[in-house]
Amino acid sequence: PADHFLLEAKDHISQGDTRAAIGALGRAASDGVDSTSLAAVMLRHRDEIAEAIPRLGAGGRDALVLALDGVADVKYPRPADLLLARILWHLEFGDIEGVRSLLARMRERHGDAYENHRAQIVEWLSVKADDALGEGKHSEAIDLLVELRQLDPQAAGDRRAMLVLTLGREARDRGDYRRAIEQYESQLMDVSPNIAIERIETTLLEAETDYRAQGRLGRAIDLWEEFGTRHLADQVTERLLDLWLELGHEFMADSAIGSARKCFGNAELIEAGSADVELKQCEYMELRAAIAETDYVGFYDLGEWALDAGLNEEARKAFDQASGSDVLRANAWTQMRRIDDALAEEELARLMGLYDAGEFFELVESLGDFRERPLGQGLREQADRLRELARDAIALSASERPQQAEVLWQQAERAYYSGELGEAEQMIEVIIQRYAGTPAAARAEAFYRKVRPRMDLNRIERGRRAPEIKSYTGAEPPSATATHSAETSTEIAREIERLKASRRNIHE
Image: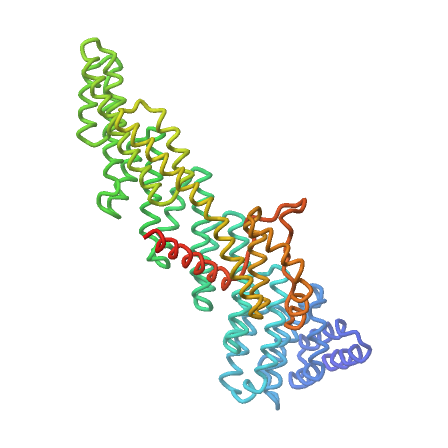
């Protein structure tokens, strides 16, 4: 009977019905057919069997298991060829453990055949890994890539990196940031460490933003402590310090002083003195909570304590509460005026910092709010003077714009008449698009219309694409942020610096 089933399998294969043949091979194996004969038939029709395996139903897969078991320990005259065929069949069957075992046996016992067939095995593993990835079978794809890595590290590394990036992105999209980082850490770090670290950093920042919006900033801290410490040593200290302080402020806003103290205490462990003010604010809130609303003396004492602690705003609030007492009102008002002056001086120092940093528009806007305060004469005069300086700086910046355009126009003309048509065209593009409304832009546009045919010809000869230059006089205004080459930007900066230097020399 076993031999009959083997002949039946041959007939089915000759008729093109490989799935029926696999069923007959399974029955032959279960009935005790000679394993060498079974191996010979299966090996002769290796590729037909492999192509039929993905289409097998449950019964066909059971028959295939019997057939594969039937040739597992056969002493075949060409053992390497049979091993290679079994690798292909187990691979198509999805038996990755079987493939792993067969590959190990082939490496150990048939090294020459293993090297000779390396490229073929790599192709089989690559195709199956791509198929598994395309079907969303990520675990199977990873297993295949692990095996592929032993044969071709480069091919496995590229596919593995793509797979891990895909898995990580999916995990991040569903908010599973820990899973994403673990994927990058375990599967990508040994393949592309720089990409892995960059993805870990991106994921930590995404998690931080997401958890902040959810009011669960503690989870972001946990991730930074676990993974940032391992992979982002240069950044983790600063990030954890900022996060602990931020979380502590959130607890303070909710009057959860105990939790806030813990957060600020953790910040102090990272950097001594970083939460000194916040810890004093916690103590102030605790003292404030213990004072009855009509205990004006208690509020006055609290205000003095806050002043000694350097908490000016908190002190002002306490003195304002104490001013409800007829006896303490005059002294409380005196203290409040002193605090107002101190706070105003601090704000004025901040505004001067904006001027030094060149943030003139923000400075003018902030000065408007600052001058609404009840300021002393000296502070008001300083604020007025600072506003005049800021406005002068803004006016000077605006007046330099036509001069910058003029410098560029002169440089563009020199480039054109020196035969540097490409460079000239780039500069004209910058002038028209970034300095619209200046006299130089009008001249540059008229000049460009005149010489454009020659520039077009030069561009065609050099195989360049025409820049998109729009007229500033047209219906559609040009972009104020038009781009130009880095080389042109550098030359522009140098030319402007030369102009400024010459102006300074003239004044001197």
